[in-house]
Image (cartoon, rainbow, N blue to C red):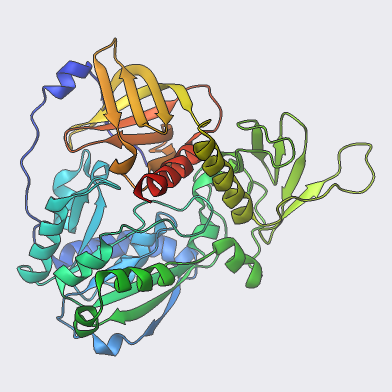
Amino acid sequence: MKIRTAKMGYEDVLALPVPPHEKPVRQRLLFRIILLLLSIWDLWMTGFTYRTKGLEKLAKEEPCLVLMNHSSFIDLKIAARLLISRPFHVICTADGFVGKRWLMRLIGCIPTRKFMMDVTLVRDMVYVVRELKASILMFPEASYSFDGTQMPLPESLGKCLKLLKVPVVMIRTNGAFARDPLYNNLQLRKVRVSAEVEYLLSPEEIEKKSAAELNDLLQEKFTFDYFRWQQENKVAVKEPFRADGLNRMLYKCPQCKTEGRMLGQGTRISCQHCGKTYELTEYGYLRALASAGEGEAPDTEFTHIPDWYRWQRECVRQQLEEGTYRMEVPVMIYMMVNMDRIYQVGEGVLTHSPEGFHLTGCDGKLDYVQEPVASYSLYSDFFWYEIGDVISIGDARAQYYCFPQNCGDIVAKTRLATEELYKMVRA
């Protein structure tokens, strides 16, 4: 999938009018049917099945909040199948509206900015359940998981549940991540996909619990490990490209500790500095391979990908605590100020340090600072709209999409650093 773009000067982009806020419009059955028809092929190809638990408690016309884990693009297609019988509005990132705002509104989508406090979004959600009498589909993790484990949830989620005062239903998928992990260049694997739909909380239960208790419950429900799921269920991924792009996530060699020199290609990931090579097996394990002329294979530091990713997080945390963390890279800069298109405004430098983000560029005209407390995670993505790996920061006035240039794999590390830095400043 691509996005509409255009080149324009930075000051000209800032001068563009900002469209006024529009309330969500009632979703029509016709558009739910269209969305389902567009989803049928992928659901059929994956042998999609689902099971429900406790849904008899939910009245047919009763609005609810549907919380769904976020693994890949098929998530929305699954929701289209499961929610066909009731009107629902989808909370989605504002850049998803670019070039198709009218269509997204008719489908029932509500735009927001990822990992930002958005009071307008809360008002829109209240309007949907109370005035439109419709349900809301929300992906509270806000971004796809890099390593197949849960993303952090917003601290405001429990308060949101208490404000909406509607039942909460959870959709949890299995197989969606194994079929299309974000690192793998949009290459689909032959994996069956299923879902579990559970009635989680009634309005009465929500009223009795504190916001903190609700957050703890949701955190427990959103705890998962999809590589472990693949291994325990013996789901074989036989495609010869299954390790393509794995270096985007596993950017640091556990043997020589070099960063940005890993290469995921075919079924292997290897360090271009020390030569250490691992095979990603059909069942999602890592196995170190012997080099030419060696005898037995060397030790495998991490057989489980999330363990490797967790170790990288610990390394980043240590750098932050020691004051040695700093990222400074040249970037190509795009901006979003409205939903017409994404504007390419020039080149610059993105710096990330314990002081937060600092973006400069566009011949000295752009100078944007974002403090660590501004966001509990980072909108970062691999192969974003087929342009490239991206780091996105910004505020209510403008969103900046920064594409690192010729500097190795830094996107995953920057997300880890953002999350750990937020924890430190909030402690």
